[in-house]
Image 1 (cartoon, rainbow, N blue to C red):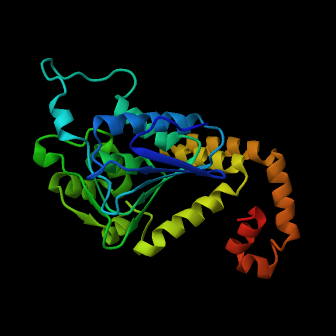
Image 2 (image 1 turned 90 degrees about the horizontal axis):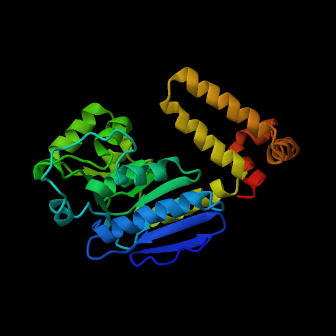
Length: 279
């Protein structure tokens, strides 16, 4: 798939890893144009059969994604009563859900500030990595008289707990990288010179594994949001599918050949797994 026609996003591909870099000076504000490009990108990445890992990062070291354009929100129609959707979620929700549910592993590399709708997009990704002393999370909606309306009130409590989400959303406080890591918003908070190499190495490692295993393992993990008995049935069904694939049969045999289930091999299982996959 050729990712053409983007003015505010640069897309590059290396093997099965796809990287998108947002570049919308001066603060990576989610203008209507950038929102449109992000929404289209979500659709195109979801439909692309080749990538296994998708990384979103910023060209600006101080801002990942600021927030949705307040001027644009002021233009939203308000001359009719509010309505409750009865069908699909609103378009912003649908974009975020595509990043969460697509059969690729999605990684947000957050090297600067992220707030409002930018944070809502980041929370939809499978993993988030930040920078010590640089990454700051802020939900700035409540002081404006609104609330996070792009999935934030639903994702943040699930991610960091209701009590912390109340503090972040209603307090509109800055959350630094170390706190965000401790609370579970970030997978890891790394030093500035380490975050890029770590994300790149992790992405390449995941992309080197059997594609069906990566895609179906993510699908099984997503089932953890269902009742336990239903999630367990999904897990069992997907496991049964995978053991029937040629990749699984070959890799399990190779695992035993190169030292799996030996004392030395099991003491170095991370390295052994990388060797198995060629990572």
